[in-house]
Image (cartoon, rainbow, N blue to C red; front, side):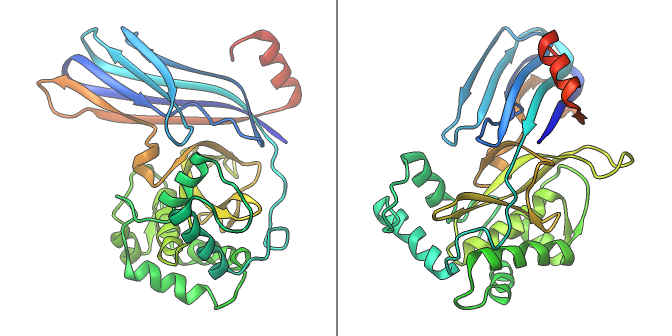
Length: 311
């Protein structure tokens, strides 16, 4: 188990005065069986006139705010305390279904709402499986992504083994660039480089081209050395009948572990953008600065924070 103190601060600096702005933030970590959110708060400056929290159709924790005080700088800061405890996952421990068997079950869910293997997915699960197998705005149909998948997935191969190979292959073949910008899929495939979100889009496109249901996961990855910077991270969740959604990271080339903190998931990057909104101003767009600090806590540090109130 690992404990984290997470701070994500976004600053919008406008060239002119903003009279009013609306924002939608996905900056509060998701609660799962393997991820305990002890504390999560969202601060907005200037203070919003109205704000509310809600869950979207995918169950992500969203926050809406409306700032009416005239301003040139808008700062949105999320602070969370999270514990992560995931069981080890590898190709051997996962169900050994052939990938083409899984695609048949995905087709059954899309047509009947049930996979045909005795399972009874919830309406939300059916929505995830159906949308996770279809093209989306940032993950369109791609012949090059399909070629990558066909060159990786052997007939009759288990989905577990094929997924492991695909994640590892993308990690080796593509150069990872730090950043949060999402680039067009075909540009990433042509140039052979991109952000973690871009590599997630490549992997999703390859999986969907064969009929496998895959979702885009937004979150964070604890840095491997004190000299690397903390930035938002992204990876892929794949539907495994009998095991639920299994998460693989094409940036690291394997399954996720306790270094990964989940914010939310959707069809692609556009569904889980950390912060988006509208600003009413006569000036041009703002300069945007994003700071992320994912700090590992010891058990004593965690206890002190929880007993002392807010971090």
